[in-house]
View (tube, rainbow, N blue to C red):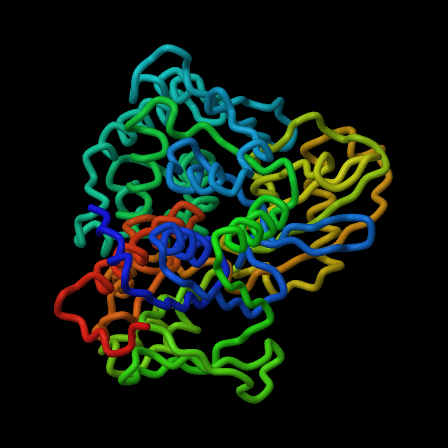
Length: 465
């Protein structure tokens, strides 16, 4: 239940550190409740991990982010930002699955059937598995519906081990289960938490027929998130300070003191006082900023680790596919996105997204470009005759935390042991994977904790003004 807004005759100042989706969500919620909010972001624009940059004539996203219909909190944020019209949501789940030398297979839910029967025709007719594998996949999908994502025991177990126990061989895992697992968890099934995998498959595909319908941006991510958020927050009276790196957060008799420096790491240049602080930053940064008194387990947050994503960008002089996106199996490529409409008028601009990229993150760009251009040519015959105008690589070494077995015990809740100091971010214990939906949900939880703290009759109001 959302706490009531603070009393109208008492003013409160809250500092939100971090301008990603979690920080944006928190700041909007608090501003709506009448709180005076300052949002500090070290980059020059808001958006966090979902931002864009210029590369010649292209506007390039740092990563290829999609969402599902079941991302209800994220979609509500898009509505609030006025960005929903800049996205496209499928009328029904449909994914072209490519494999070299084979015609595309479209994995799609059936119209008119309730969950989980809506997936039965797709699995029964999945041509990349043999008949025995398809029957076993249907049985495993049915069994997965009973796996509780909130059971700590399931979090300590690997999804790959569970699949093996349910008759899934390596080919079925590679050609079916990892299509979703690698993309959603940035880990292959053998290294992924069973609980997080169950959250993905149950919530996204098995419990509601339309939950897995895929949405994608039609514009660069900065146009979808960061810039609309800056406009909305300014309109709500939030003070937004970009290029502000927070150096430390200290409890004080008047609340908290937040010291900031320039984004380039220069000496402290400013200090502000707040009744509450929300740290909506990655776990490594949060561990650095959280005072020892606020958390006895902050050193454990480093054990969450990180998992990389690599994107190979390929620009052709002519169109090589009409598909807006596709998945690939038995190929170095995993997912391929057509970014032409958002970035260029002529030719075609494709992005090959490689998740769980531990073996790829340090490979030289030239070798990656050659490997993935060849992979695309193996999937799209038209790419063999098109001229490759440009190829470049972007890398996200710390794209997500490592969503391995046992990680839930390391993910803290929103509240810390210092009342008024609150955590947000997709890495916190939302029960969801490290996704845009998880980030937005964490922002709502952080706002709830702050509002409850500010209205608490037991809090020391010495610092309110």
